[in-house]
Length: 204
Image (cartoon, rainbow, N blue to C red; front, side, top):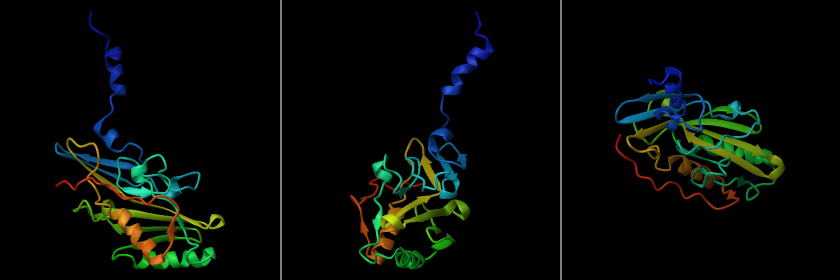
């Protein structure tokens, strides 16, 4: 007997699409796919979209680093303490703003309060990304009561080359930029330092 159409269609709901797999754990995404690669750009992971006021984690489907990625060691980096410079959070925050402004050409602070900083920087790797898609988002959050600064730096766009399920590496550019900022400040990390991805940059 032929299977009723409604029953035959039911299993399809459980089959993940390629776009779902490459944007898993991310929000506000658009996906462009051709037979050789998939490009996913997501704009919904900034702190302003989090009801709890925390910084977002960095998922396995994107390039970056975050103090919130405690369950994903390859995307986690420990908080910074500013006590090596000062015990005054206001002085520390001013120093951080200056370090971000001078770390690399193209870095621009787009939102700044007494406890939150959001900057953007051109995505350096993989190359060829332009416009809003070709940006990294850098966020810092001051926890004055704990003498800590939390942070997140992540590329808006991930490129997947068939048949790979991991994005083309950013060559640790997000991590290296953060390390430059911390180096300028002379602050300490509270935990094991993140060594970065060992994935290679494939041609796209």
